[in-house]
Image 1 (tube, rainbow, N blue to C red):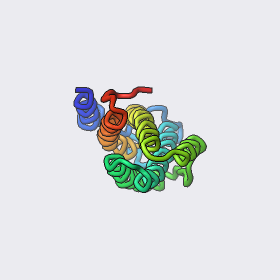
Image 2: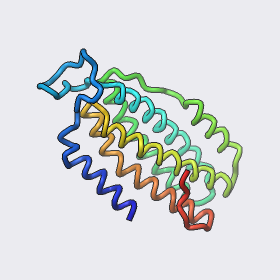
Image 3: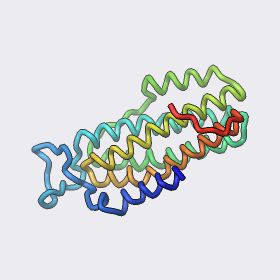
Length: 196
């Protein structure tokens, strides 16, 4: 039920009245060029767009890096399959974001930030089921953060292309979150969802 509501919300954001607002001038700078009155020209970013791109790139970079680690080290086949999905889906999203960021001249991180490096270090110290649980539980938290970040960009961004990317990725990330929660239940035997 929660997944269905979230997907409907994301679809509504992408196709409903919010889609008409893509490229809105929220927090726009005085030097923003306009395509027409009230509609910023392509690649006119605001602070939200720039912060979103940098945070999303940092998270996406970590998803691929940690996914590659988990794909090779996880015990459970379901965790290995999930990790492969992270490498594929977040790798594709990273490429799309990098293209838009380059067009908008937004610099993106090229290495893990301190928080994701600390997570990587913790995972390197775990083996077997402990590794699988630590990885999947971290994925739940990371995907909750990413879903909030995507919704924030859809709501407050100015660059229409970056907003549309966020709207496209939101249902994918919610699907990843649901799968991670299910895997956590399978691995722990609890069958419950973990919330931070």
